Length: 88
Image (cartoon, rainbow, N blue to C red; front, side, top):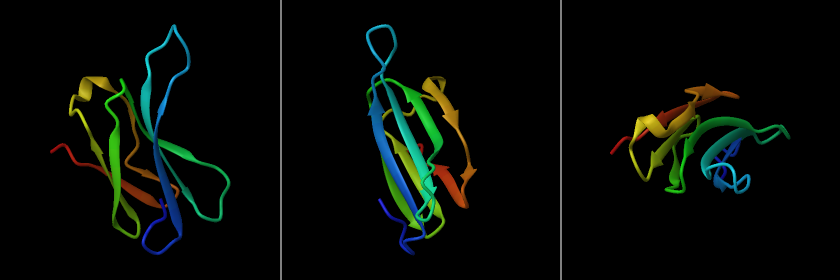
């Protein structure tokens, strides 16, 4: 998903690494001109998360389940993008 000014991109996805690990919900961002993604949010489980650009440089993540004990990673800024959590 491109930012409103088309300078950045974001994606949310579920990752399953196999039978011995939990599935995870991940969100990554990158500059449109860069091939490298930065992981800004990860949580255990399959609940998912919605993402939306609140401004050209502000990505809002809305986790389906707001349980911070399941958050594995949250980075408030990466590649020029500010990241906010909408905890309902």
